Image (cartoon, rainbow, N blue to C red; front, side, top):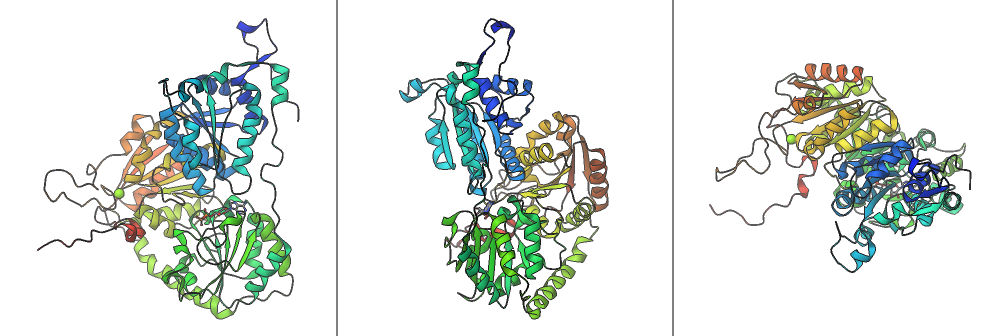
Length: 581
Ligand code: ADP
Ligand code: MG
């Protein structure tokens, strides 16, 4: 154990006993000892003082308006930094609000710790009706990677250490840490408290792949005629950027990035087959998956997206052994951490490596150029109200000029089209709805992206998606964060043109027409813009990003422009009953 600089907290009222510590201080000291400097949360019983004291002890404590957004912030902080993001909530309802984010973090393999205060065990377990009574540990367990409760202040050090190790090691994920109210005021001798803390050594140890797994993978790759690399957000998380780039360039194998892996290599890289994705998946004969699961986002590795049945062989790099064969046979499983596995493949390629056949590269290049050319005129339209394409064409240029900005993106059409249109140039700059395709991550992700990186953040939000976390514009203004929110306002979900067939109410998918989201931002002292053309949009975003101050741009989009559920309309069940004429 290394020394802790300061552990005795002198409070004028306990001056007579200066060598005591308590639960509050031990939680803070345990986090700080492990290099955790930021807490995202919402104050209230019983953790209000924990937040205050953490701030007084020099931690950054970012208070939100709703726990779900604090939780999303913690989760994405984990993705960006490889350290568990901390979300702090009150008991029962606050805990439940944070749980959505914890489950989402676990699903996305982001390291995060949800710390919630809870009611008294004795009363909860006898169901005697305590204030905000709830058996939080039991409820959290199935929704996260691990869940722990600490009952004695002397165990806080171990509890925090276990939570950190569970969140970061192997496949990262969400961890729940239950801290009953009584724990915080438990007093301990300061010396004993200091000794009880644990600094976690090597929380995410390297897991080197077996040499035979590497040989097997290389043999399959060598025999390929039409090889493809798929980069997933695990590859972005691993921060093995140089090795991954070297693997692509040395092998000469084209790659397709999953959405949050965009920018690991610039989307304009000659080996990027992103703009020829359908052809690349359908026609490839060997696919090397790097930190990407064969879930719905990759059509489970089978079906018409992947060509003739059995025509594709998969090699998979993943830290989680049980991921192998989850959907289809993996002919060459490579279990280990991405940095070690990619380096081992590179070493194994050596000098004699043969580049893939030129006709495969030429096919993908031709497809890519054709798709880019087809898209180009749509991006240049100056019609008002704007189409999605025209507005995104403007934002695409801005991201090209400001490649270190972080793009947060959610919505239906706003998401699908932005993913395809906006090129990314640097790793971990695109944060979006992830594995679940969830709505509501926007403002939480934006806050943490700004806090953790200090870079400007551009949020591209559907009007519906924005509504889930919109109140956090107050949080963004309160902390003066460099966040530029663009709301693509098409008056509704998917489209703003539906009607109620009975004529009684608004349709279920429409909002107040011509809403002025920009005025929400003005209410809290940020800048609001209302724009109707791509030129106005460009000027407003550039002015905001130059200022480093919060702004919300209400971008008027043609209400008739969107399609049902964006790209995934096929997932929306339709009634099997045909209407009688
Ligand atoms: P995407 O949605 O971008 O395809 P997924 O979330 O489906 O990405 O897949 C990410 C995968 O990366 C998970 O299976 C996870 O186990 C794996 N992973 C995360 N971090 C590492 C790492 N450091 N080394 C190896 N695999 C990792
Ligand atoms: Mg909309």
